Length: 282
Image (cartoon, rainbow, N blue to C red; front, side, top):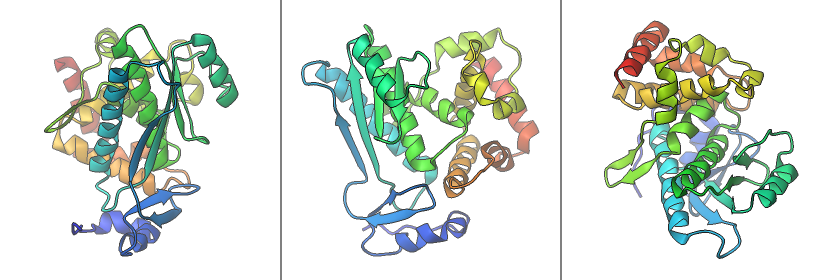
């Protein structure tokens, strides 16, 4: 069994978790009601299951999605730097029929507007409508799987963080050297003609702004911020610290944006400047 060095920064706010981690029987931890309640378990930390009817989906597409989903989980592990893996059960439903998809959405998340994919936390389920394009189908499925994993790690999460991760993760390519992520051309084109990015606008946007007809700017900004952070060791460290802190505070309220700017070298001003400079260079 590998030996892990626990960092005080990670363990002190998570004493209950750290006590579990040093228990010999604990090979992984499963979340209960929220991130502050843990159950030491033995068994696989990650599982994937497709629940669509046999024959409805191209098996090569399913395999591609499964590889991408595991890559997202492993990316989470790397960002969190947790000494013992968290248990995540990814259950995916894919629908080729739009009517059947709408019925499923209505039964699980009737409050959502018209969408092509969603996740439902109570049954631990990601659901996506297949597209004529296998690339778009893959993106939809991985986007919702990213949300499912984010919720399993953090409980709730602010929209900018959850959507930023999902928008980045949907383009994941797993290589022998680790995950790679592609620039989202739709977001990049939109940001090229939009106003300068604003951390304040992104962090403070109310829920209604994320569901408004002009919400594309927020989705583009959230994608670009997370993608930018992944381009440097300083940015990855700040994002990892933000996720670690969010996971320890997820039973109550927390300021993910505050964690990010506090951990980024130079603070909010440097992050705003570096992010804007990066966008002009992409």
